[in-house]
Length: 74
Image: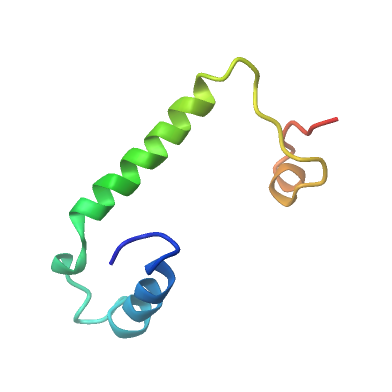
């Protein structure tokens, strides 16, 4: 199972329907290469945001920014 739009949704739905919290939900179903790549991409995103010159802000009216009282764009 690989995350992403190409096959991620279908693979995740299949996993949830056939394996999630069932006897067949075993560690060998994990694609550790894909997991490592996914983790690296997210680490790079976090690093890039942390290294920005300006603090990121939510788009005005964004659900998460509003719900969690985040800094909003003017």
